Length: 406
Image (tube, rainbow, N blue to C red):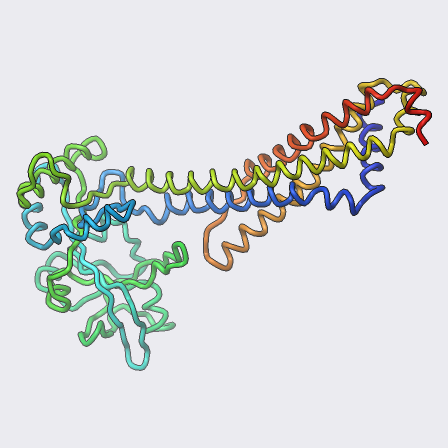
């Protein structure tokens, strides 16, 4: 029997029991759907994190009070650390030899207002003039403030897209006044729309000069210090070591004590995100494997039932000249087609779920050909594995006994 004839016979056998075939596929559909949906969201998030969330250049790092915290004990220890203050920034700026640029950033939340328009819980950044370039802020209109404006403590501001929409609507915001708390500021720049990250808006932000921030909000909050290493990526490690030495000396930290501050680099952020996404994918694989395993067992059971139901048919085929391998290939093909149908349905279900999550929760999803092919290949593999024993049993039936079966 040719492959085409085997395929027609297999499809006819499956269509003879449509409902049973569909119910058999539920495990495959759930398993493949789970795998495709989760991996699509993780793939989209990986790309989004690389392109949008991790805004640091490879040769730029941030010195913080907390840094990257991975457990409760680390958090409790970090709470006891001394704040990083403006004196630390001034000391690093004047001392570091392996740093090309040093910037500072302090953050508070406040209400912004203009006439009857009001937006609460806006992130207000007090930064040095070089911060915008270091963090690669995309200025769509206007400009970032200058070193002169920062040193003089001018009441100027660069705003995010949400502030522009809420306070100014269709008006050009450049040159217009608005309030941060009770203080009046003039808009000199607008940052391009950044969208949402994990459900949180990145456009709900304002940047003002550091000296203006200190006058408005005080100097009691810990700040972040952003450092660009001299010599690019090659000089990053030496620059980090120099910063660690200076800050440990300022805090009189003993040689065997851990750093009383955190340092965040692009590699460290990517490593942390890789651990999170990798653990999520492994969890999804475990869940999918359970469903696929159950689906495979159900397919094997149904195929064994089919062998019993079609014993006489098998005997007739063998008596008319069909070879054992033809019978074996037919049942294997039926199992593979059955599982492939579940795989196709699972891919559609998973892709729909991924895009639904993207639309509702603003989680970026990316359904790639590799993910689709992996889901289909897994389903076919499960079908072939589940169908092997029934196919072997069918091909080994004695012809005389099979013909006697009523």
